[in-house]
Image (cartoon, rainbow, N blue to C red):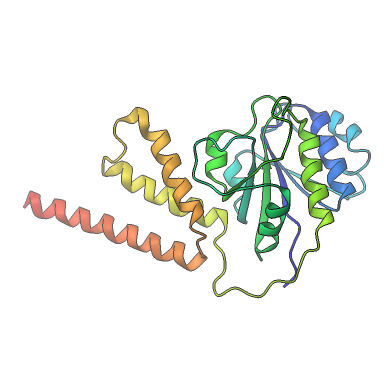
Length: 245
């Protein structure tokens, strides 16, 4: 099976110029699927068109805008988050070479997340990813322009030889399936009073999602786990009825 090129996902980008420049460098190195999540200045953006140097008009790069990150990555089976810090999360950390190898080892759709110019990726976006991609930049001056960051990855991808990979035993779960499973589980935990105190809920959800994304779920496994969640919820309801009787 031939490896497909990863999508580039810009989360909350601020300047149209940076979106256009990112598209231009994607086109330079053969990447075509650009996904834009909640761009600050809306879309379409004339500044992005100008900086793309015709990448959009020529159909070299196809931009798609999404309201939420979950919608943007719903069909993904493997995601990398570009960030300079591990954020206290237990995730594998790769530089460009190993990161490209990991992307190439997945038969399903893959993607690389890039954060906003000012603040980078939010923690909840990193928690949704399988691993972290970081660059060996100068610690004394580590700030990269958004398009530069995309360019470093795009060059690494183009410079690698993408192998044919064998069919897996089970189809890797899409991010939509994985998020659906996690949301289902979190909903039942909420009803069971697990998230206490409320102030710690966000961190608790983040920790759970980090654990789930590390596991490499298949589609069948997510369906089985959701069946188990449903069975436990039904059983808990029966127990309440028995106690009331």
